[in-house]
Image 1: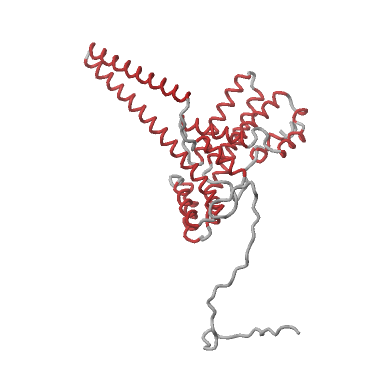
Image 2: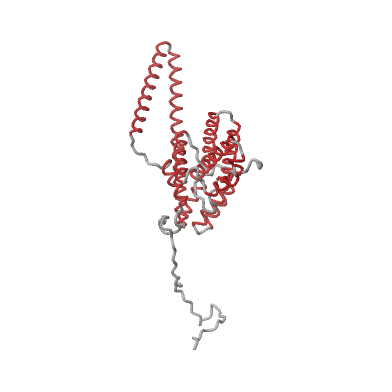
Length: 349
């Protein structure tokens, strides 16, 4: 015999016969299966994927690397100190000799020396500020990845505010920053808030960075295909890669100087090494083989295509390292998506 269950009926909330049970409803237990290789962030949440771990490792190797004394560091430090002392002694003797000849020449030499020292100090200060800015961007990238994985609302609100402040000096981001500020007051879920900030602030910058990478890859492939000298090819490719890396870094808020560019280049090289170098994926290799590039175009055109692939690969690594937030709502672009013209046959070109 089946158990008798009460039939549903209507009632009024202000009825004295109605009793409200305030006890919380028991939640059903949930089970989550996680990968054994992916680390679980503090506080639970989703594990950080391998691509993000590669980016963070590259950033730590360059911008965030702690200083460790090495023999080469001691050698260069000593050499730089000796050169500085020699330059200072030479400048002092020069000014003294100018004063011995004429007081006006000595005063003019002292003014020039003061201008030189002021310029050197200004350049050093700019380099330090650029390094600190790159370190903060790398810190913000890693912190946003952890906050999104753990779905931490409090931390996400603070990090999203830092992300918006990074672009407060750009007029073209005013509408995106207003959208993010509105979302910070309305969105409760930390992961959704980070996704909205990424969509509003970084997606337009991603499009500009991909356009820069495509333009640089096209220039390199065309110039190296018609260049008569291999030396000119090397010079042009290096110049385009340097310009591309600096441009991508500036798009995402970084302003690398000389030392900052060296650190950034180290991070990009580490990222390329971790992610497989020129082995950019089976799909890319299949496209190259499928189009029959080696049999349809000349050797010079093949060199241009390879140099274009190298330029695009470096640009994509710079994009991943310089980006202040991980790719969450969109997957990282590939070479075939950024520069599809490199995989067309000779007739299509």
